[in-house]
Length: 234
Image (cartoon, rainbow, N blue to C red; front, side):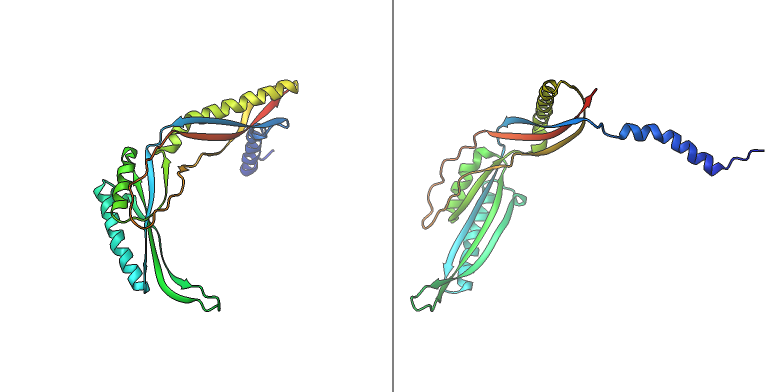
């Protein structure tokens, strides 16, 4: 009489059912890997202004107090220009001594310099010049740059992603034809990344406040690169 062990039967059944699945998951021995690129032109709809105040005083307290007073006016000017409080963030604050360099090597401290910078998001880029004009008028004397970018960055890249994959297939088909082989389906796709925001040239304003410079957002190019591996058929 033949006796069946339930655990053994279950193990054998699992092995039989799993064998085709394992075979299907194995990558083909012959393949080709290429890189495809895609891009899309968009108009920026978000600007980030980096504005700051730099002040000097005989003591660290003098420099800090004077800086705080002016920076409070700058932040108030940003809010008055329609910038929400959640879009204003301190990016740097520092106090450092100022030295009087002497030939005898005795560098004496002559005062202190305080620097405070904030980053402000301007969600209506048509108001960038007006916002700059207000913060300069409020006492900002350190404009360290403007970044123009786009919101929903990933969604805008969708068309570029499709174009990148199509570009990769075009290259793979050319290579396969040159090698006299038949191109199979894609077995791996990896996105390599997109283009970062484009900053404007760094600006420094010292002494008396001046009128805000003209600002042009222009057009931004978003790029996507993908690495695609195709199987090769016999």
